[in-house]
Image 1: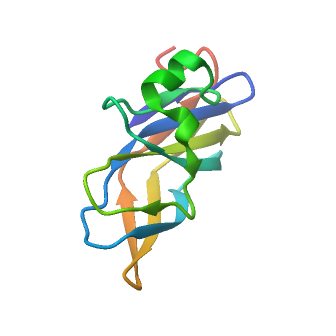
Image 2 (image 1 turned 30 degrees about the vertical axis):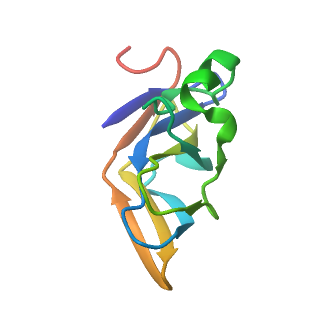
Image 3 (image 1 turned 90 degrees about the vertical axis):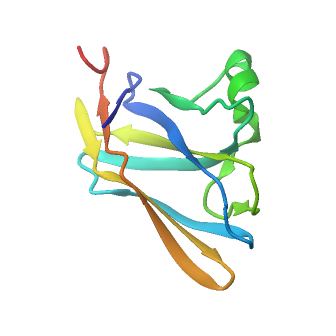
Amino acid sequence: MQCGPTDRSGVATVGDIAFHNSGQQEATITAVTLRGPHLMSLLASYTVPVTHQVLVGTGPGVPTGEGFDRLSNWSARRPAVGTVVKPGTQVTNLVLVLQSHATVSSSAGVDMSYTSGGASYAIRYNLALQLHAPPGCGS
């Protein structure tokens, strides 16, 4: 289970999913959804090209700041739905911006759908999520 702290408004970023297109054709992301959310909603999803082997990671609020961008390539983000992922070795970070509607909220996992070569596919990430209001996880 991935535990993340929210900011005071209940928003958190979870960017711990990395993927690449190991197929022979481009893949287009068609949907990103939470599986079994409890008092949690998905505000936005982004793809971020991975540079320096650094993922965006998990934290309160939405990523900001020059130092952060230098490591994670956040300024190169794109809305996940509609992103075309070329085949090859480029690793992409799937980043979720989440809203917690309670002191503690959760989701059983994350699902991503995509099309490639005229067929539709789905990936079920078994990354269970739990968000905690300040002061955060383990408090």
